[in-house]
Image (cartoon, rainbow, N blue to C red):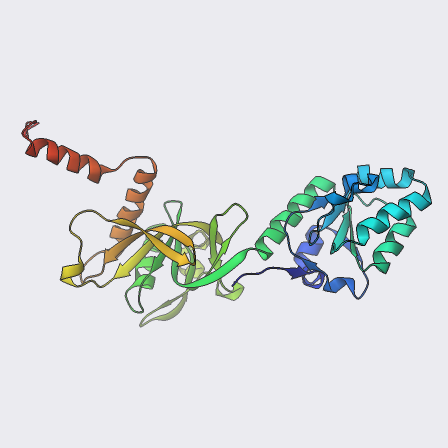
Length: 320
């Protein structure tokens, strides 16, 4: 699922965000339907001097001390002309920082052309960062997957596999070893503005909840403590659990491959064969450590194979 826009009405309905930004809204009934399509907040800046190309459609724009003071210094007719050229463009809202007061005609023109106005006592730089953080999450490309998502040795690890393969049971043992659960069963992944894949729970009410066969639903926080759960994490590795037939089992090291978690989005993946009696939690821990070492440029398997080839060529002493 890809979210391409968010309405002003939806932003206003998020009371936590509105209170955090200490926003007072001045909007018309029509302006709340305006759509924000880009997470970046634009400064009006040069547009007030007549360079209207700096106004970008679909973005929230901001006015700080420089803009408001400059607008107040203009003759009213010229100021009206500049503001009207700005609000005629398809911009959803204008944010005024530091509780500044632009001329009255500014609000009249915004109302006439259905541009929402937010006022806040917070300074410009803080407002920009808060809006960027909020909008980048809301406008991110999102998709869901089935599995268990964990923080193992500081790495976001997505454990996947067919039903009843042992994903939740392995995760439970990993939690008992000190690792953290992020989401179980239904996971929401989003691609943020940096390109990182962030995993989180699909519903707030499911925070720290797991379903274990023969037991039912359990609350990880209550059993293992609040440190056993984490809200979100960047996904960097996929562990795929499979019950492989003997002819499909690869002899040798854990083979790292690419796994497509969404169209065009790939993550490194280890496939682990599930057999009765195997300690999957321990093997998953080792797989994550092998991945971490490879990120540092340390690949023991390649070093071992090179040394083996060296001995087979008769160029070395095996006793050494």
